[in-house]
Length: 380
Image (cartoon, rainbow, N blue to C red; front, side, top):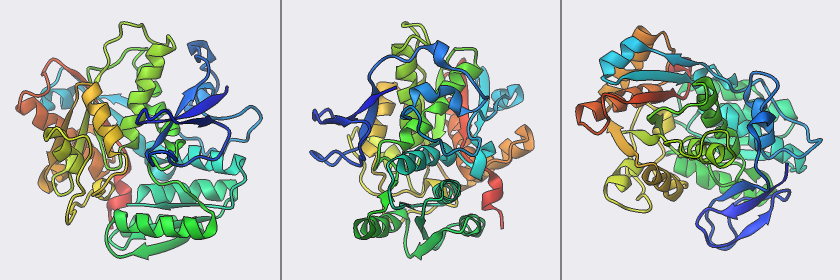
């Protein structure tokens, strides 16, 4: 399979897919991968993991895959939770069962695979937590040097997991935006590949497999809505990209009704929610971000334009949840669903209930809620 790179703003920039790429050199916005030929659904085959979809991923023939067995996480139907939340059907996609205990395994697997194929000297990333664990693990598996920058306020179990993989970890004062600045400076000085969210085109290609999996696990049907806890936006973006590809390539009927994409953010750091309801095309950075859901503590997401466009194209919505609501949602997923949920997953469940109560989500809807990580990473 061959592919090309295109600017997400429509500025017209394109580049060959087999070259190292970060941002668009014309407008400094994210790039996206487009495949040069349709991928037939018959091409799905092999192990029960995201590698079933290898033909729809940027892997050149003969290239080695850096894999720890990621993907094909459970999609759990929970009728009793559906009744409590107030919707017709509810499933929880439990990404905490990935290697490194979060959805970040999908994207960082893809970024490290490309970095290894291109012979880069190393990789680096800013992290609120889970991305750091994932990059550390996949860099170790690929024997690629890695440097990770994280806020000092990152939960200690997450920092301990990063250190366990033997990579260089630098703690910074402030939030993930401050870690991002340090990462960019380090990449500039060393030539390490900065794989921060949507600052390269490959992580989204790993993330989009969540969309393929939901469709396949629902017997090639789609729910009415997908509720996704969103910090940087790559998961949301990736799922929407997968839905478009499946319809374009004939995996789903051409008249398939696409699901509404709904994002959930913490009330203490909700730049995308604020921008969406204000009708803005980009988000203003959130001042003094505060939430115990560290994956949602992203005050200035670089993928803001792309994420907001995704929500609007899907006729979706955006909802903020306070800290008490996040804790209640997390506890509900555990005590009523048996899911060891991260607070980000609790935020998504609580947002779903809030939207039903405010008549912004129909009680007749079928909904997939994403739990993006394991709660074990947050307990100390």
